[in-house]
Each structure stands twice: as structure tokens, then as C-alpha cells.
Image (cartoon, rainbow over all chains, first blue to last red; front, side, top):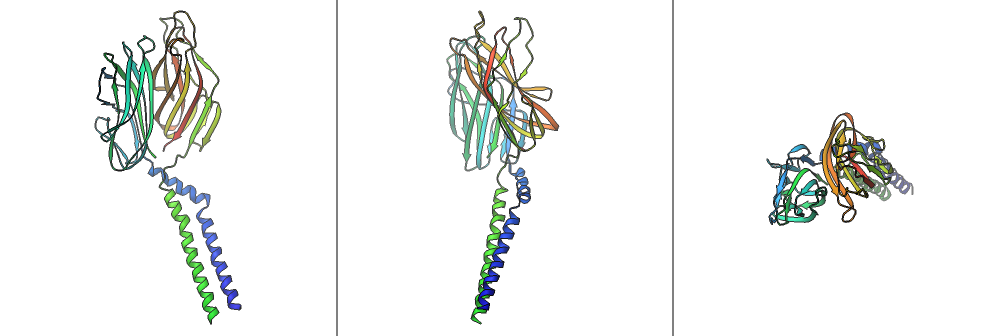
Length: 179
Length: 187
């Protein structure tokens, strides 16, 4: 009987040590310390450009958009090419954001903006403006999450589908954030 | 003797479970440490109309940029971003800034139909990322949802950030109604 009590007492003691160790492991101070290490795991790339790109009308092929100014990057997951028009993404999930000012000319203009992921052109969005002199500007915004299972090239691409009209892209920015 | 063995066996089993269980939180924490975490963020909205008038004459210089306010529905975490309603003090670091808003050309001034305006970020004393948009006549295209996003870097101890607008069109006001800003500290 004594030995049974001893066994139970020792077991309770051992179980108490579990609780104590668990509690210690989950103290906010320690969690905060661990979270602080996360900074090294974040990867992102952001850049701007203001040099005009003219998209001539009635074009079926997409042209990559460049982002050569104010480049900010962190981590090793995203690598731009020399022209800053194509980005090599390592395996993972990414949020891609694009903002750009398009200016149309006479006659009314229509343009497509898409993502070139490897050999695939995906997420083709369209925008347009009419020919009125003061209504020719548009800020186009695109936001999309993509997943790549191997190193893959990404570009933001655009084309002008209107017959005869040209579209000029001026200020634009890209943000690629590894999620 | 049997009981002594039982006692010893119970104790060893308990200790084994203890060690196994203690490893779990450590492993969980290790996994958590691999996740990207946004340490500080701020977001706010506003729906109070702000009206922006253009140059007073066709030959007048462009008006100054004016800050947009964001005073409602505030959400924030961390200490890197402080709001003053229309200005946001950012501590040293890299931030993602996002804006979405409704702009409306509601003027009926004779001879003034379309409105062109610039939207930008003011970081310290500099105006950066100046984008341009336009609204059509009250008859064909009066309202627009505009969104943009940009990464900014603050090298100093802190810098003030604002979303700003200026109206480029002579005598034609433009109104900003519903809008929101989100600022995330990336590193």
C-alpha cells in the first residue's frame, strides 16, 4: 500500500514538472523573443519607375513593365533581373501588387494588365479611358496572391488592344511580398 | 517488491511523458519562429467629404497638395506608427502603404466637365509616387474607386507620412468620400 502511494506521489510530482516546464516555455517574454527572430524570415521587394512606356494599339502580345527606381528588398526569395522587368521567385506563396498611371490618347483606349508567371499569362484585367482631353488618365491597381512550387520568373505585363490609339504608362510601383 | 517495481515503472513512465510533452511547446515555438510576422500595423477610414478645388484661373499655378484625413475605425498594433488624423509618424523601418478611396466629380460648373487630379504620398517634406487620374463629365463617368500601394523606407529616427491630393482642373472641384489607409511595417 505504501509503495502504491509512493508511485502515485512520484507520478504527480513528474506531472507537475510537465506543467511547470510548459508554463515556462510559453511565458510572453519567451514568445516575444522568439517572434523577434521572425524578421529574418520576411522577404519582400518593392520598386518604382517613372520613365514612360508607350503601348501601341492593336497589339496582341504583352510587354513586361520595368521597375528600376527606389528599389527596396529584403531576404533572398525575390531576385530582379538586370532590367528589373522580371523577378525570380523561389518556391512559396507571394502577394503581388501593382499600381500605375496610364494616359490614353484619341481615340478611346483599352489596355490589359496581367501577370506573367513562368510561361503562363494569368489574371488578365482590362481598363479603359475615353478620348476627352481631361479624362484621359487612369490609376490602375492590381493585387493577386500566387503560389510557385519551384523557382519561377514573374513579370507584370501590359498590352494595348485598342485600334490605332496609344497608351502611355508613367508612374508605377510593384510590391512582391512573400507570405 | 512488486509494488516497488510498479512505483518505479509509474515514475519512469511519467517522466518520459513529461519530457515528450515539454518538447511540444518548444517545437511549436520553433515552427512559429519561421512564420513571417507583421510587427506593427495601422489602419483607419473616413467618410467625411473633403472637397478639393482646382487653380483659380486657367493660368494660375497648380494648388498645393492637401492631406486626406483618416479619423474613423482605427486599428493598430505596435509602436512604430502614430496617427495624427491626417499625418502618420513612422519610426525607422520599411513600410507598405495602401490606399483605397471614392472620388467624385460632382460639379456642374458651366464649361467644366472633366477633372484631373494627382494623388501622392508625402514623406517628410518630399512628395513621392505622384499618380494621376481623371473623372469624366457628370453625364458619363463621375465616380471612381482609386487604389494604390507603395513601399516606403524611413532612414531617420522617424518621418511623417500623408496621403495627399491636388486638383489640376481650373474651377472644377472634386470630392473624396469613403476612403481607407493601411500601413504595415515590413521590417
